[in-house]
Image (cartoon, rainbow, N blue to C red):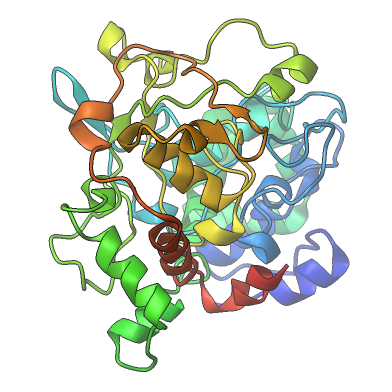
Length: 374
């Protein structure tokens, strides 16, 4: 694959080249193309910046918890998850009456990378285009796109707006499926290959992470059956309600009223048991892709570990959110909590909490390790 990424980043936007020899090359140009938003200011890369773990690094009135839309005013209600390792997300399915897995976005409403790619251009508080035809009209302004779409998707692809729009999403999905997004070259991967050793603290964190006796982290954050699998994505892609509180600061600015229903907001789901559940995120690059939880309510990774630990201790100090110096806020959706089934174990002291954080830092791709010091 011809790599355009360096030149694109230097210019700050995509400048399509004369030809695209593959869907991946076309998808890369589309990924960086701000012309696919209403005001021509926002691309996929705006909220999934490749220099910052494919999340949104922009500061807003609410920090980096949620993203600013193409209109320069609108703020979302959920944080933009990392696009790294997203290609491993399985198709959405209901496992039984009270469990679900897979799908894209926090509530699984989109099918695959292509389904996800088709959402933001038409979202009024994101890229803001009114319909597929408007996006296709923008695409057709570029003669290189016109030629490439015909070459890669058939001469008649421009005869139907839906077909052209689908081709766009397929190309973006092809780009997002490249190794750029999932290199498996973190310190943890290098450790598994025998290239490096973990520090004592990182090793303690690794043991704790995979121990059902001490943390149960791997119940949700392990896909493979073996803890030494070299292609582990650190998510089982299931949906759980862990009692995350609403992000009051975001709600005060974006004006959203009422609770975020989580999986129940998926238009294909209508059972009350789905309320408050969100897809388990990958922990790949987790140390450099905060803020955390579906709504960015926690700034620091250590705070997230403390939040889980609060369920397993009566220590009054552990019932205080260190970021607010107040008691942990109540769950936004108090029903369907997974506390008894998933979040149980002995209370963790500071040494073990720090060790878990240290281990999660080893899941950072090599190209982002410099961000750990920032």
